[in-house]
Structure formats: C-alpha cells, structure tokens
Length: 65
Image (cartoon, rainbow, N blue to C red; front, side):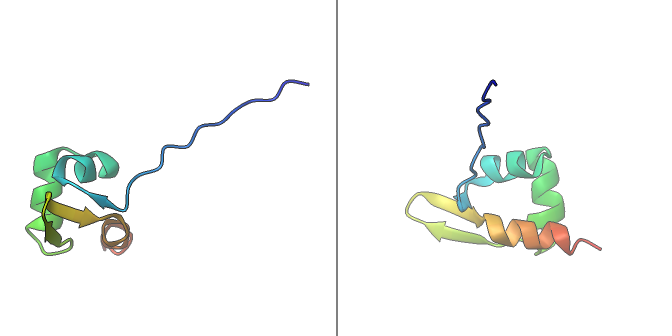
C-alpha cells in the first residue's frame, strides 16, 4: 500500500498587505478597497510595517453579508 504525503500551507497569523491579499485570493487593490477602506479589517502598525490579522480577515469574509 502506498502512503501519500499531504502538505499544508500554513498562513502566518500576521500578514503584510500583499500576503493578506494573496490569502484572500484577490488583487491587492481589491483587498484594500473592499476590506481595508470599508473598515472590515484594521492594520496593526509594528516595527516591520503594517500587519493584518488572519483571524480578523476570516471574520470579515465570513460576515460579508
């Protein structure tokens, strides 16, 4: 019997703007326009720049309508 190995891509909890857009599978402009500019997702300013919380993004998408 063959055993298959399944890899899971783990997304970090805090992502920059480009990573967050990729996580949502949308363009960066779309992420900004529909999630950031509308206030559904807020950035946390760190020493490394703005970061977006994966759980907050999930919540915003889940409660879209």
